[in-house]
Image 1 (cartoon, rainbow, N blue to C red):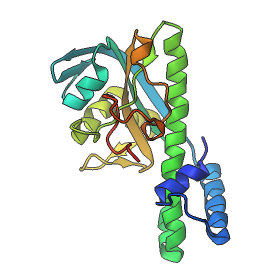
Image 2 (image 1 turned 30 degrees about the vertical axis):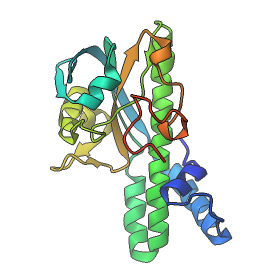
Image 3 (image 1 turned 90 degrees about the vertical axis):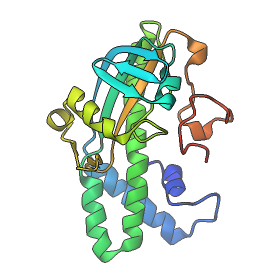
Image 4 (image 1 turned 180 degrees about the vertical axis):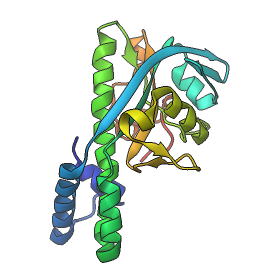
Length: 218
């Protein structure tokens, strides 16, 4: 797990601008502190998958979502995943919000880069296991993307026992604590040409891809 410096800058809103030495040093120091303090944990489980129109059934979970249905179309298996980098980012944000607001903003960005990096690592493990069985991965899709309602966090938490197994809890508004945590669905397909080989939608030139995730057109 690493707080990719380029991704951290992207989350901070930089798009090719010149970075001041002071800012670059703050990002480096903050990223190192966060990497050392984080305690990444994850859990994932594979389930049967059925797609009927805009209705998706993953194990005992039933979801009505056109976007998720498109993503999982043709998949007979799917993986539910949850991951967190722990409480270090939240602790650092609280600490620096009192003494250094600029640094608190950097922690927010570096934390987002960290959890993405860690989930990429977990997904790669899922990919390796799937390839052994002749299966390929669709892009991961999280509650809150498109019309995949955030309220389904509760179902995923119950199925994976997230609170018990990786120490992540849900607020009444279905937000995760620690905040730098992710849940996702990953479809497994037998058709390699329908799988995704890109790490992030934003890196892909295929802007008309039916699997492209919301908010990944940057």
